[in-house]
Image (cartoon, rainbow, N blue to C red; front, side, top):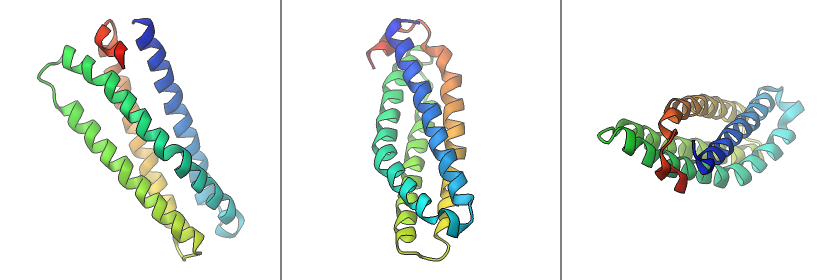
Amino acid sequence: MTGAIDETLKEVRREHRAFRAVVHDLQRLAASPASAAHQQLQQALHRFLDTWGPRLSAHLDLEERLVTPSVIHALPIETWTFDTFGRERETFDALLDLLREGSTWLDQDEPGAEREIAAALDDLSLLWTRHVRRVDVIRPLLSGHEGAGHA
């Protein structure tokens, strides 16, 4: 693998681990008894949305710039990967919107807000796990492909 691709993949892997850890922490807070963790969940969710909303978008952009040229080079007629990444991105955006809505409900002390947030976080965690696996499957295509190094 070229140096640029290798460094980019290291960054992608770091982002994968960091995002997973943050979502896992939020899941634990959302699963805690409401009275004990309400304020902590509220603060953590605000930080998550402020930080990871834009960061996730940038991460997905980077992966798209890295993966697209490699897949086109290795499998020129393959479109499923691009369709899947597009649908994943739409679903990530929808889940972040649900979390923003849940955050508003949490701020307003709406009944069931924690439950709705927990469900959205579970979906986000599952989607992220599948996303990471998909990127891991594609990773061998990046090997030796110079065009991907210009991500």
